[in-house]
Image (cartoon, rainbow, N blue to C red; front, side):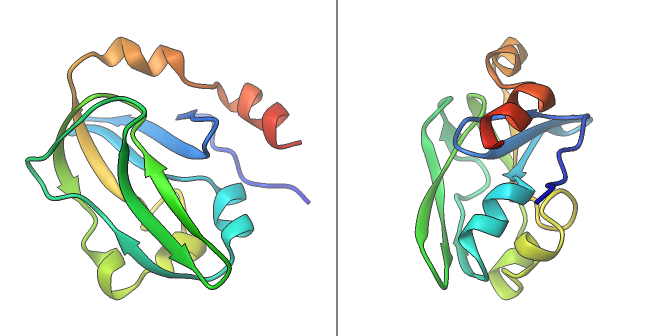
Length: 127
């Protein structure tokens, strides 16, 4: 099976993606991850204003098959939370790279993005 792996973002080994935007770093989970989880039924996310450290857990995603922790690709302050997921967690399945995003982080150190996997490296990991 072929999974969508957009070239405009970096990836974590734990299947989160990070996209630099004008507001900071937007974070979600990959197409591969949402497929592995199955139908997402619940997403627990932090509050705006919370601080997070790179690789720390920032939330939980629950599907009909599993419960998984979510990890931060960079350190910083949470400046955005996708509240649409509270009422419509299935957006993670339907549009993992668009409307299914989870949080936005104002990064303390953007060079942390260099620690993440490139799209090519991530593709090799899930192959």
